Every structure is written in structure tokens, then in C-alpha cells.
Amino acid sequence: MRERLFDLGLWLLLCLPVLLKSDPDDGGSWTRVAVGVAALAGCVAAGRRWPLVPIAVVVAASLPLSPELFTPSYSLALVAFGYLAGRRQEQTRAALWLFGAIAAAGLALTVVAHASLGQWFTLLLSLALAIVAPWLIGRYMRQYDRLVRSGWELADRMEREQAAVADRERLRERSRIAGDMHDSLGHDLALIAVRAGALEVDPALGPAQQHAAGELRRAAADATARLRDIIGVLREGDAGAPTTPPGETVEELTARARASGLAVTLATTPVPKLPGMSGLALHRVVQEGLTNAAKHAPGAAVSVTVAEEGTSVRARVVSGPGTPPDGTAPTGRGTGGTAQRGHASRTPSGTDLAPGGTARKNQAPADFTRPAPAPGGTGGTGLVGLDERVRLVGGSLAHRVTGDGGFVLEAVLPRNAPAPLPAAPRSARELDRARREVRKGLARAIWIPLALLAGLGLLMVGVALWTQARSYLEPEDYARMRVGQSLAELAEVSDGLPDRPLDGRPQRAPAEPAGMDECRYYRSTLLAAIPVYRLCFVDGHLADKAEVP
Image 1: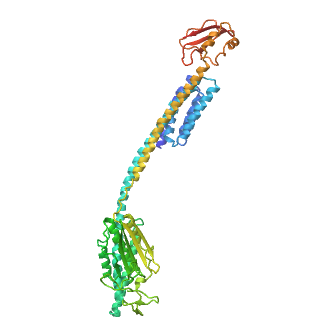
Image 2: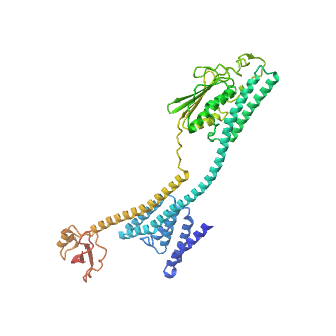
Image 3: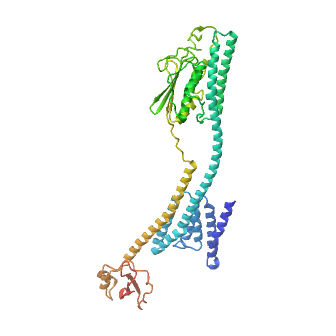
């Protein structure tokens, strides 16, 4: 509705000059008034969809009335439609082509009508002032509005992003809680299952106690599985690794695991200390390796090695069948860094082995080995979070299955974690881009009219020199001319009269002699307008010659 009211008001405003200058009482006609009013109505209606069409229509209506493109009836319409075209049109190429076509059409009309080139220069000046200048102003206002609108949009987006940041922080905190649950509770439940499994196969206990230990072990395994399912719901897909592991050293971690019945050997003592996030990542790597060993390879030997390598530290946790990487195999259980091999393991025939290595028939199989995702598989999120944690401190993580069925978890951690590089805010980048677009628009608004004026000036200078050369009479030729000579004789005396004399008598020139049929004026100098030569003729013969100021 607002746009319609604006178009109606614009149409009424542009019709006023047509009604005033085409009034039948002033020698106009009602037909001309009706055609002008209808043409302006069509231009206003089509201007929003095709901004350049109104300019072309008004120019077509103005040129027959005035070769200089200046008409009292449509000059206001040219200014208005030029400005609106600059405001409404995105691209500039079509407008430049239209301006060039108008200039070419004006030149063609000038040549066809045998008019002076001064009229064409006036048309170019009218084109520059009445159409191009308002169009450039409209382009500037469009760019300015775009910058203001971009600023408000960015401000609104920043408010939404602040709200989103708060929501994201809450989700991230939930992810940290989920990671801590997986790291600490999963590790502890796995150790409880190991202890319960040891009690289940202990010959010193009776069947009832062994059955109760088996139920405890199965309950711990089920709790671990449910915990993994809960973690999968709580943890976001793009959540980073938790950053608050238990505050204990690697020695304390392995000792606690050994006390829980895990056959773990710490090959490196003392363990190199890493500061900050690198130390937390080292603790997390060893903890994940021990948890996976207790969950997926119960009773198998585990070897932990932490070695310094220049500015980095390599941590390796090997579990499962085979010999540890350092070539030693744990042979005892308890303190002292040894553990009994074969605890709660199974023979190929499916029988369980007691702690002493003897097979026990008719014993319920240890449920640690029930179907579960392989270490490093897609079933859990421990290794995914661990890889993210190691990556954030500038390290690398690798895990693989050995040839004899064991599993190796290895990480290389730098002593000093690199500082994260701050990223430029997206809103700042977009605001900078909007400012560059506005600067480009302002530059175009400046250099386009300057280029047009420079080109028009050069063209006018060239045409002026060419016109002056055509009307220039050499002083030597003028001196050889004699009164009474015919035009043919004058052509023989000199190189001939110039192609084109000046248009009429110059201002403030003395009156022409009486009785002459015609008088022609020629330039006496190429660059100056005065003085000039006057040649007057009677019956085709030179009757008078003079140099007039």
C-alpha cells in the first residue's frame, strides 16, 4: 500500500509540467497531453521491475521536441527516473549501455538533420546533468542504505549469536559432565568387574559366593553398557574432549589399577612430568588404555611405557595376548609391578582358567568377554574424545591391533601445548566486506562522472579543432584574392575556399556592405575566434573583402 501511494504521488507530480506546458490554450493539444500523461503512468508502473524503461521512454518523448534533450515538460521526469534507476537497479552495465545509446542516437539525429555539433554537445550536457548525475546519486544512496542495513543486521545477528553462545556453553558443560562420567565411572566400573571376576573364579569361595560374585560382575558390565548408552545421548556430536580428568599421577593411576587386580606393568619410572594440558592429556591416554584393557581383555597383561623424545613425550599402552613391547612379561600378581598372566582368561576350548593357570570345567564363563565393540571401534566415545584431547594440545594419537590379537594405544604429546589462534569474528568480516562494497560504490560514483566529463571535454576539443580547421582561411590565400574574381577563379588562385564558413555574422562585427547577395566569414587564425575574414559576393563574384574584428 505504501509503494502504491508513493507511485501515485510521483505520477501526479510528473504530470504537472506536462499539463502546464502542453495546455491547449497555449498552443498545445489535448492529444499531446493525454499521450504524455499515459506514458508517465506506464513509466511509473514499470519502473519498479524495469528501472531503465522509464528513462528510455521519456528520452524518446523528449528528443522529437528538443534535440538538446531539454524540455520543460519532461525534464523533471528525466531527473526523477534517473535517480530511481540508480536506487533500484543492482547492476550498472545496462545503465551505461543505455547512456551510450542515448548519446549515439543524439549524434545520429544531429547528422541527419544537418544541425550544428553544438546541439549534440548540449544533449550530452543535458544527459550528464539530468540523467547520469541523479543516477549516480541514487547509486550512492543505495550503497549507503546497504551499509546501514548491514550494520543493523549484524547487530541483530550478534545478539542472536550471544544467546546461542550461552546455549552452546550449557551444552558444552553437559558434554564435559558426560566425558567425566565416561572417564571416571567407566574406569571404576571396569575395575569392579575385574575384582568380581577374580572372586568368581576363586576356588576358596563356595558356589553361592561365586554365584554372587558373578552377578556382581555382570551387574558392573551392564552398568558400563548403560553408561555408554547414556553418554551417547548426552554428548554432542561436535563436543570436545573433557578437560578435567582425575587429579592423579600416572604412577598413582597404574598402582590403583594394579590394586584392583589388573595385570599392569609401568615400564618407565619416574614418569616424565608434563605441564598444563599436555599432562592432563597424558593421564587421559593411560587411563583410557587401562579402561579398554580391563573391559575388552580381562586378565591379559598390560604394559605402560612413557618415554621422552626431545621436546615431546611418547606414551604407549599395550594390552592383550603376547609380550609387552619392552620384552618382559609380568609373572606375578600384586605389588612390585608384576601380575599373574592368564587371570580370568579363556582357553581356545572355551574353559576358564583359574588364577594359577588351571582349567576349571563347568564354570560360568567370564562375562568380560561377552560381545562388545573392539577397542578403537565405533561403539564407544572414549577414543573419539581422547583423539580430540590429544589434538588440542598439538599431539597425535594412534591405535592398532597387534598380530597376536593384542591392542596398542600410542600418543605423542608436546611438552608445551600450542596456544590457539584467535579467529576473526564473522560479523567483523562481513562488516568489513560491506564497507569495501560501499567504498567501491563511492569510487564509481566519483570516477564515472569524471571520466564522462573528461571524455566529453576531449571530444569537444577535438570537434572544435576540426570545425575550426574547416573554416580556416590561410592569410596568403586571402592576400591573393581580388575583387571581381568568380568562385571558380578563387579556387584556382588558392587551394580553394574552406569547406565550411562560420555560422552567421560574429557578434559585435560591423554591418555588412549594402547590396551584397551574401557574405561569408572565415577564421584568420586557427585557434582564435577573432579577427575574421569577410568575403561578400554579388552574382557569384567577389564584391568586397575585409578583415573585421
